Image (cartoon, rainbow, N blue to C red; front, top):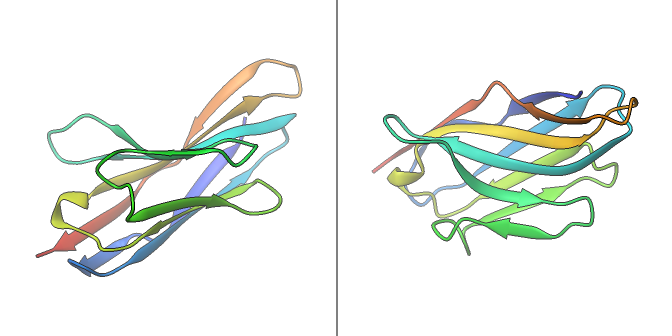
Length: 120
């Protein structure tokens, strides 16, 4: 399966922007869907945004119009552009990817998480 390394988290004020990146590495047959999840203290992990290998996207209602997910041409790096950040966006953001191993078995991978803190 792939290894995922996230970067770009940090501390910002409300209304500012951040861009998260997640780079996938490893030898697999394919990387299909990539996405970003987040988990705030005391809450369950939730989907923020996802993108398919065909570049179809979906977003949580809470981030629509503010966040944009995209992938590079090689389809191995996924980005999350976060604009107009709100304190309620504070969470650990996790990258997720799924696809097919060389063996033909499906896999799902998670990154280690990157902290985003939005102060009011």
